[in-house]
Length: 283
Image (cartoon, rainbow, N blue to C red):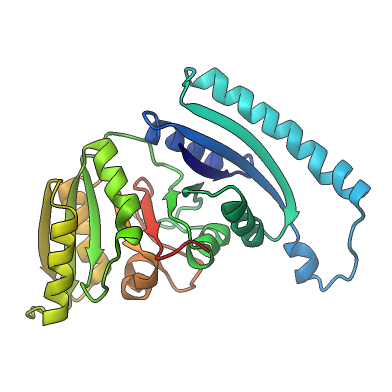
């Protein structure tokens, strides 16, 4: 039984992520936790010393959120056929968003977070809201980020960009392994460099480790030489009809031009392709 956390702000964008998750885990026994967080951020931004009492929080934030979560559960039951493998619980919180997510990941033993992104910038790029960016950076739990225009389709091919500089542990790669297994997907490992160069001994060892770990699946390795890393990735994704991108959180700096725009909170990527971010350990 997988435990899946679905943060929601009741927007159509977050609904799209929920719908994607239900289809993505269609054949998997799951407990879904629908979480709505009324954020404390505005108090911090305003340097306010005022802390609302419990009655105010209950009447102003908690009760309306619980009502909206019930409406959300009704929408799920209306738009999706009953799946006996799926169970749903609702959660409300009044806290800083990332802190709330981190706490629930620990308390509910969450296996994966699925959350949406919103905001287009140009035809090929999307800006991920600060909440999603913060979760990726600060919560060590596998996170599937679903762009607002993403629709679930068979995951024929999943791309995994790497510089081969990291030694990958089994625990880190397990989420990707499980996805490949469940969806019968092939893995396209993509190595991008600004100029053609031979792999070092350590890089070759890490490449061999990937090949050995994923040898059960259809796996191919690509070497791309391009000064513009982002352009190389976008070209590869389009040419291969990639359905998902997977990457390792501690390697995000290497993909600065793929993931992050001028500000760290802005992640640029296709508006229709989800990406999975994996972490070393749960925190």
